[in-house]
Structure formats: C-alpha cells, structure tokens
Amino acid sequence: MDIRRLSPELSVSPQIRAEDVRAIAEAGYRTLICNRPDGEGNDQPLFREIAERAREQGLEAHYLPVESGKVTDEQAREFGALLARAPKPVLAWCRTGTRSTTLWALSQAQAGALSLPQIVEQASQAGYDLQGVVRRIANGGRTALDTVDARHDVVIVGGGAAGIAVASSLLARAPSLDIAIIDPADVHYYQPGWTLVGAGVFDPRTTARTMASVLPRGVHWIKAAVAAFEPEQDLVILDGCRVVAYQQLVVCPGLKLDWHAIEGLPGTLGRHRVTSNYRYDLAPYTWQLVRELRGGRAVFTQPPMPIKCAGAPQKAMYLSADHWRRSGVLRDIDIQFCTAGAVLFGVPDYVPALMEYVQAYGIHLDFGETLVAVDGPARKAVFNAAQPDGSSREVVREFDLLHVVPPQKAPDFIRVSPLADATGWLDLDPATLRHKRYANIFGLGDVGNTSNAKTAAAARKQAPVVAHNVLAARGAVRGEAHYDGYGSCPLTVERGRIVLAEFLYGGKLAPSFPSWLIDGRRPSRLAWYLKERILPPLYWQAMLKGREWMAQPELVA
Image (cartoon, rainbow, N blue to C red; front, side, top):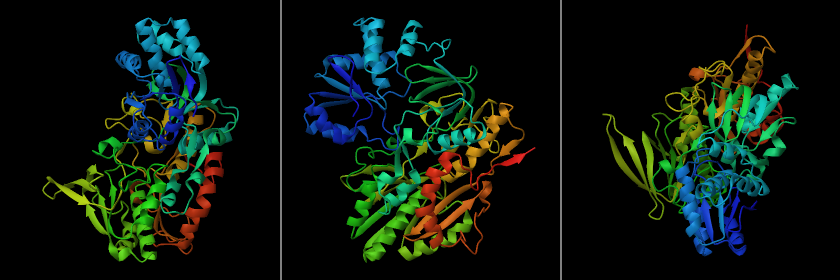
C-alpha cells in the first residue's frame, strides 16, 4: 500500500485490495471511500470484495465512482459531504490516488476551508501535482488549454503490449526521438498466459512484471490516466487537468471489461463457483474450481463480439474438459458452451478440428445465447436466447461452475472523444492504422475498429506498421506501411496440443510455418511447445524490445 496523508482527517491511496483492509483497520482508519469505477483494470478487485472485508473489520465503506479526468463540481460536493459525516480518519482511493485528491481539493475550495496555495501545498506534500486543478478552478471549472505541462515528439496512450511494442519499434528506427508513454498502471501483464494459469500450467506471477522494468529505456513515463483529447490543438488532457502536447499521437489503451453489463455478476464474481480467466486474480480460482469439480454442470460463456482473444472462452473450456478426462470424471460433468455467436469459430477452416474435441468431450453447443444475469447463491445463470424469427426468450441454467467472459467495449475516455467512430471504437484506416480524420494520430491494439482479431499477435504485427508510418508522417522515412489484418489464436484443445489459428482480414489463412511442421488446421504438439515455451520469452524479449522477428511491415511506395 502507498497511503498518503492529505489532512488529519483524510488520506488517499492508489488501488487497495481486499487483503489490505485488515492492516488499514489496524492503522486506525474507520471509513473507506472508493472513487474508482469497477472494471477499469484487468487486475482490479470489485468494490464489493473490499466492502465485504471492510464490514468484517468494522469499517464503513462507500462507493463514489468517478471516471478518470471527469471529476465534476457536484461529485466534489458529494465527496465533501461524505467526508464531513463519515467516521474519521478516512482513506479514499482510485487507480493512482489522483481522482481522490482532486475531489478533496475541489471540495475544500468550494467550502472555502482552505486557500488554493494551502491546497496545492498539502497535495504536493502527499506527492500529487494539482497545478492543473488550480488552473481549472481559476478558469471557472474548465481545463485551461493555454498552459502545457509537457511536450513530446510522440505521445503514446497506453503501456500495454501495443504501446510498449510501438515505442520500441520507433526507437529502433529513430533512437533520438522524444517519446512519452501515458499509463497509470504499476504492473504490466502478459495476458495470453492467463488461459494457462486457469489450467494450472503457468504460475500467475510469471505473467506479471513491473511497468518500470518493461518500458523502453529513454521513454518518458507519464504515470497518469487520460481524461480527454483535444486533437484540433494536438493536446491530451490528463487526470488532474494536466495538459500534454504532441506532434504525433499513438492511441492504444486496450479495451474495458464491462462486468456490470451482466446483472448480479459483480456481486458474485470470484465466489459461488463463478470465475473468469479475463482477470489476473481470478484465473487461479478457475483452476481451483476445475480441480474441485467431480460432477455436475460446467457452463462456459462468450459474449457478443468484439472481445479480446475470441478463442479464449473456448480455451478455458477445452483445458478444463481435458483435466476432467484425465481425472476420470468427464462422464459425470455436463459441459455447456453458451455463445452469443452463430458459429463456433469465425474462420471456418479451423472448425472441423475443434468439433472433434467438442464431440470427444461431450460438449453441448448453445449458439445465439447471451449471458444477461447471474444469481451466485442460487447457482443460476440467465441467458437471452435469440430465436430464428428474430425474437428472443429467457433460458435459465443451473451450474456447478460458471466461467464468464464479460462484454467488452472501448474505454470511456475513447468512446466519448472526437477520435471514436459511431460505435465508440477508435476510427482507424485498416491498412495504415492512421486515424481517418486526424492525419497525425495513429492507433493499434484492441481499441481500434479494424476487423482483425484482438490479440497480442495482431498488436505485434501492427506495431512496426505504426512505427514506420509515424516516422513517414514526420518526414523521416519514405513509403507507407500496410497492415494485412494478421491475427493468431492458439486454441488449446488439450494439455499438450493446440490448433494454431492464423489468419488475415477476411479470414484468409496465413500460416507462419510449413504444413509439414505445423498444420494449423490440426492439433499439434509443436504448437503447444510454441505457446508454452517460445511465445512468453518472444513477448518479453522480442516484441517489447522492438525486435521484429517475422513482423517486418509491408511497404507500399
């Protein structure tokens, strides 16, 4: 924990976890206030989990969520009123502590309890820069865009796989380039490994490294969240009202897991035998439930597209079924795959091999079914099932294990920005990955509206394309790089065998290896070895380091 004192009555902190609550209570705190909306991060515990632990320790817990960079005067008044009546001392938290500090600063200014210099001094002593907030107060509640806090040649929004890969590719081509990465996270995750964590193959700790350790040397790390974009002025507005200017902007913040879109899910996730490999701390719970299940019904869900790694919902199912087969209990387990889609996999060439495993494991396929509600204590899942005539009906399934994949969408600050298309995704040219309306803005990774699969393999091929085209926009290189839509999905159909799906835009097959070595349409032991042993070091030591093995971009004169 990194608790920082703003006043005798209030301290703030970055994200806390349920296991921290006992120490917080022992430190004398009596009230907790959460200012971070659920679902912002893949490793973020839900407020419900912390609130339950708080009640056990005799603490009050309040939920006052605020979108990053969207602190309103009304929310500040509500925070001030809550702070006034709550048992003290109070600990408030968000992702980094900035939102909580901003709420406190605005509430103090509204009440006239502290002068602006006093607010700035107390926040500074706690390690938070509120100069941007002060400018906002002085500017009548609006962010002042005439004062820029930092300027860089290239600003990259997002320090995930896509952001770090494109920064490394840029530096490999232009080492003197002034690059900044904006990301508030302390930890970087190898998310493709979470499927294997949920199957007991990987230790979850091997999928996590500190952000500081993976950022390219020489890149400026702006540890903050993005609030808004001002593309007409080449500006990014940060949480805390700070302003960053760029010459070229690369946008790749990933996507948002919308746990709250499924009624009842936030209150039961991580207990009552409800789990998901899409969260770092829940993938081990998946493996626990798989080991414990000796009979009953196991339900695996897949929401409407787009989602990241469209094969991941199936991977969890196949690996679980394989464990039950090896344990001799498969015949006692009813496995159901409930998918909102109309087909098992979007590229038809790989479906025959997958269907062999579906039949071997005795899996029931339920197409056109979308999970809409979960009753954890009753162990019931409610689905909206599409009918051939266009209507729908409600289907209720009891379960003994429920693996949920949540609906997914672009982050809030993207969806409401000028950079989004009509559906909320980053509006990109599918070949150049340049923004369709702003010539000095590019994008890649899961946030884009391009039709490729949202996988790390896609980001690995996109990064060199964006790097080249950014430098071309700066006049440093010639030609235009094109992305062909490459994506890869290693479908783990059993422990030791993988169907290695590789394809381009339109579902055209794009194998990286000759068929005599790895035929992606058939389960392969060598493909498993690639997934388990080769891809993790390739990710850490090649993709994130700007080494573009088998990822050189196609150039068009």
